[in-house]
Length: 267
Image (cartoon, rainbow, N blue to C red; front, side, top):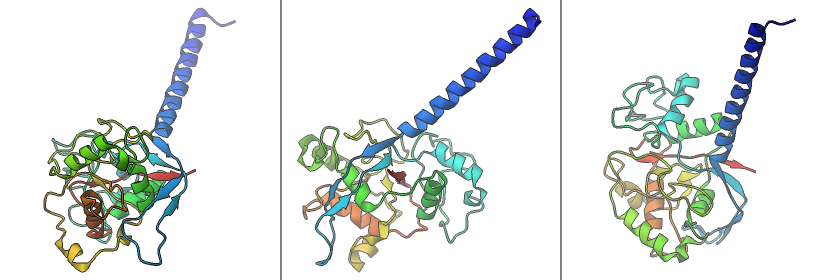
């Protein structure tokens, strides 16, 4: 027969085990909720050849609800030492890789842990996504998701949304990034597709541009902040051409002060 003291120990142990299960369940739920479902639809490319389709079908997929943060990327490099700032090979990231950090595991004083991670190369972003069991979104997926406003899927027909886009694209990028998720989500529940950072996509180098456009885009100057292009069939859409012009300037090892990423996953 157990003594009251033994019974108390058993009950405490059971409560601790139950608490751990609930905590793990909440963490798993939170992780799954951070991806939003984007329904199937159609994407109209900004640039295409005469033989390319005018409309691209986009299948349903999941997209991160906000960009990958400094804290999340820190977990990645802790688990994958070859992607630390002191160890990464120059083949996969230029000399500015994680420049906003003061070391392999420390952020600079003005860098928020829940702000988007920047100064990351396409190679690093792709490796992170793979580590998460995900991938980078394609241009078509990203642009299709970013075309939605907070109230409707066809943001090009939302006057207020278009006004906000114009304001975002006419404002130089801030020197200090704010936290993710602080602005209203679009109708799919996705935050910060506009107005915070540019974002890597899987096929960023497929944009059709001229040599002059590629040469005129400087990575060190203050780039206008906002991530998506809208109404790609509209040749007068300044924001759309800015987005594709920026993408066309990139190489996979480049790291930029306002270039981050988010992950996608098929159904």
